[in-house]
Image 1 (cartoon, rainbow, N blue to C red):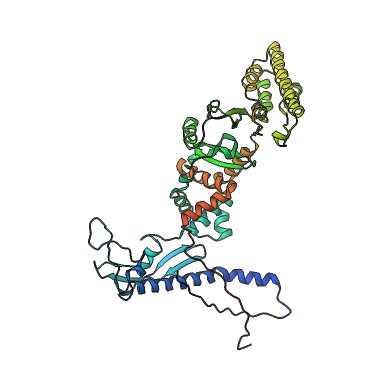
Image 2: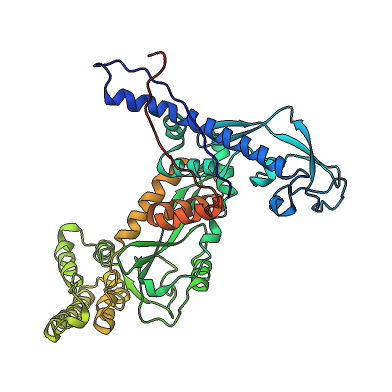
Length: 456
């Protein structure tokens, strides 16, 4: 690897006894982006000179490895030329302007002529993997997308001073390869449960779409994004998630949902379904309302229902628990199931047919977390609170910027939001792979010294 140094001379004027820390930091911040642009231009100019020197006759072929790649002149098929020796032919009349995270950079491009095929090209563009029509570098793309995720479009333009149109943001998202990340296999050993739900999103010309998400809950209780989908049937979503699961023998995972239509048999052979214990009493309230009971008359039944489903399991290691502790949980579980059955009979005697139907469909999946704990010791989730929080994060961003976008584009943005907000390490790795960060360029501050100015 080539090693070089850049020498920078900075001059400052300091009013003794008057300057404060805030002003020093303010001025340094003003200097940051222009300074980075000058450093970047210096590095690129030096690299361009180095490439052209290596492609001359005086260097062996090993020194030209990876340099000088170009299309053969006049070849209809656009084949690559194997020639790696060139003659310098000056600079392009206009340099290439690129949008970077530091601002607009105008790069002077040297032109060379291939000694083999006679093609004229700029070897710096090929060496830096910059396309013939590229006008931005990918770090700028990342900054824009992260800014969109963190705020709305107006604040993006005014607050961060990023010069890009709303259509430009749309094009960045459309061209993203984020879908490839959500095709990777899912290791079920690192999960203790799955959740899925849907919510409405605004679409073009006042239309309304359906945003659906599937997340995993890790053994540490964190959200693991598994996928976002706009206007996609649950059967298709199930097919995609199933194809990614490493293990499909079931028995260790619970699947929590709130009664969303289409989720009753979601991954039924892989997971044990669990109805959300928060939505359970809430759904009973609506069922009793349809049976004619108002809030003051149904409150007693709802309070009792909340007590019955609120069984807590010990957080200690299952193997270290005494049998008496397990027996206490088992007894509460059996008593709760029995009392719910009695409640169903009470509602049936009173003619509350909606409440009876609701509880009968609910009870078989209301204590899955307890049954799984008694069987395996796994503490599975029982409410949708984590996924509800996910939808709040997705909704407040999509409604601000993607309300008029097509389904595929809105889906990509929702996946980006989900990954950045809930899996920061994977988000960082995604961008490292996309940017091609492989340790091929390292820069350090060697020393910073203060020297008196000769005019001081």
